[in-house]
Image 1 (cartoon, rainbow, N blue to C red):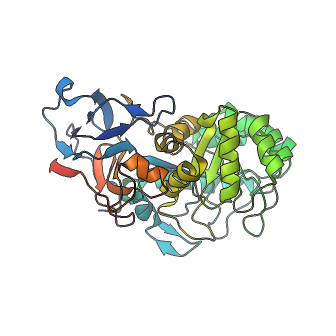
Image 2 (cartoon, rainbow, N blue to C red):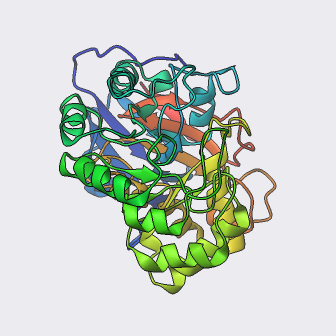
Length: 399
């Protein structure tokens, strides 16, 4: 597949997908849809239902799902991009394309913090954020949507700085605590300014991740009141159990579980959220690229781990990586609903899995096989080069 955004032809497009074996909605309240077909026009979902009841004529692209599962494209709520499909953290090319082969179609930056010589002055950090927002909007590696341009707040920022950022198109803050602002009171003031102008926020939680970062404990997290508690299971080092439970109980903000964190702490968070009846707060990220590398299968590994070891039905665990994140991060994807972006991943049980179905295999701890991804109604990848081979894969009939 090409490593950039295909040129628009200007002609209307109609995607039709038929013979879907199982349709996952991404909606934790109703995770499975009674449907076997879907239609999207110009990259937006227009019809969902049974093939006999919807207009499937005139397709410019026709995909036969061949009985596999269709899910909203997976979302990675926590990445650290820098430039295009290259990360200086590991000096690796193609990490975004590789993650697409793990079913991820959308990424949200938690800060471009691995940029060599990252500026810490206010003019510089704003310039870098706006540049990242512009470059990742203009160049989509393999079609993946990377919502970048996430400034890390520094002392001395004022309300007008956040207005300027928002006016320029910045929608997310990088992890609070990775810059010079590490106290709850200052963070809370700046987070409130960001929220006033529609900027979504997250915070570093736990011990230092790299030299220069520091401990952010429960008191700072609660006082800062960011929209998402970033890597509540540590990135990498988690807070003590009682602090994690206190964070779950002490606010209603997003509980982000990451691959590059403490898995036991992730399961504790999941268990606590379930006991509170608040699984809708759980979202997933990788926290990569990082010192531990790039994790192309990090999101589906988290889905499988949380389902198999956390006792959560697989269809619910997939919501953590789709609809929950979409709602928490104000994204137009992540749910199979009319009007949403036509971003999909096709999966089936891995060959020779002990599970008899996709959902059963995931609940047993196996990774699914990805057979195809679609972003904005356009096929972006076919059989994954990274997942175990799927039992069945969809086929392109036309287009």
